Length: 563
Image 1: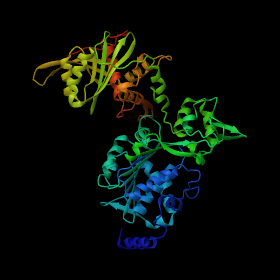
Image 2: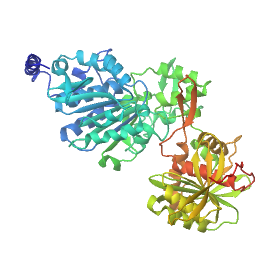
Image 3: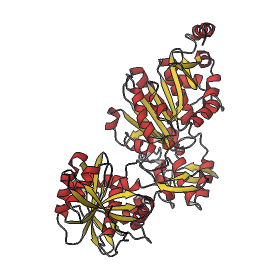
Image 4: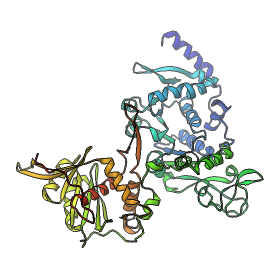
C-alpha cells in the first residue's frame, strides 16, 4: 500500500476513534453484527448469552489458554456469532485472529457470502478494515484492523496451519477440518499470552471431531426446570426420543409445544432453562463446552423440527442426520457399525478381566504407535471372550508383551510390523511359531521372511498381509449377527473401568468415511488416524485366531514362501 493509501487509512482510523468502540461483547454483537435478517439479537437465541459472557470475561481478564467447544445444531446462528467474536477480538482488543475453515475454496466463498457482507454493514468496522500483508504476502482473507490481523484460511494445507502467529483461533465446521492440520495450528499460539480457541460444528461422528472435544470439556447442557411441578432435570435432546408414549413435544390446541413429561405442563425452554455443567471441575481447567441443539432456540421453528422428525421415521439415514443437526447428538448411521446398543449385546455375561492362564486357547493382537495397545481373547467355540486389555509404553513393548504372552498362555498373536519395526521383529524372533507381523494390502497372503537380526544372525519371522477394510468389516460383523453377538466383553466397572470405557470408545471409533476417486466412483473405508487402537488390536487378535486355526473356524491359508 502506498503513502497515500496509508494516509487515507490513518484518517479513517482517526474518524473511527471512539465511535461505537469500547463496547462489551454482547453490545458489540448487537450494534455491529448485522446478518441478512437484521441486527444480531439474543431474542430467540437466549442460550448464547452465557457463551458470549464467558468469552467477554476471557478477553477482559486476558485469561490464558481457554478452550471453548460448541457441539451444535445446524441452524442456531453460531457462525454469525463466531464472526462477530472474531471481529470483536481484532477491533476492540487488538488481537490477531485466525478463522479456520476446511479448504481455501470454502474460505473464499465464506469471505464473499458471510464475512464481507457483515463488515460492509457496520460503518465502524468498514472504516477500520484494510487489505493487509504479512511478510510481503497478501491474500484475500488477510485483513488489518488498526494493527491487528484477521486471517481467514482453509486448513487443507499444513502451511496454512503454521504460518501467521495468532492470539485467537476460531475453528468452524470442525468435523470436516483436517484433524492433523488442526493440531499443527496450535503452534500459531505459542507466543500469545491469551491463546483462546473456539471450536464449533455440527457433530457427525460419535467420539471424534467436535464430539471428542466436547467430551473432554465441562459439558454444559441446557437443563430446564418445570415451572409447574419443579422437576429440574429436563434435557430436551435427551428426552426427545426416550418414550414415544410420553413425548416431550405434543400438539396443544393445534400447536406444537414442549411439555413436561412428569406433569404435562407447558415448558418455555428460553425462560425455564439454564446451563449446568456435567463436569464442573473442568471449568477451572479452562475447558468449556456447550451442547446446543436446535430444540433450545425459539428462533428455530418447532413446526419445521416436527416435519423433519416425521420424515426421518421412514428413512434411517435421515434419522441419523436429524440427531446430528437438530438434537446435537452425533450419529454416524450406517457409517458406524459398533454403537452402544451393539456393545450392550456383547456384555450379556458379567465378568472381570483377569491376568492368568486359561484352559482354552488364547489369541492376542497388538496395535503399535506412540503407545502400544494389547488385546487378548479366550476362544470358546466360535465365540471370542475378551480377557485382557492393556496400554503399554512403546519403550517397554518387548518386555511387557513377552510377559503377557507367557502369563496368559497366548497361542497366537498378530502385531503391526510398523512403526516399531525392530521391537516387533524381536518379539517375532522370540516366539517364531506364535507371532505374525502384519501389514495391510489389497489381498490376503502369508509368508516367512528371512532377515538378519541385531546380532548378525539369519532369522525368520511370519508375516501376514491383510485387507484392512475387509478385516474390519468381519470384526464388526462378529459384534452383531441377527441380534446376537459372538463377542463377549467384560463389564465396565471395578478397577478396570477406565480401561474398558476406553475400549468401548475405540470400538465406536471404527467408523467409515466416504471417498470419491478420480473417476467419480464412491468408496467407503474405515477412518485412519483416529483413536481406535483397542479396536485395531482386537481385529489383529481375531486374525491371529484364524491364522492359527483356533476356535471353531480355521482361518484362510496363504501361500508360504521364503523371501
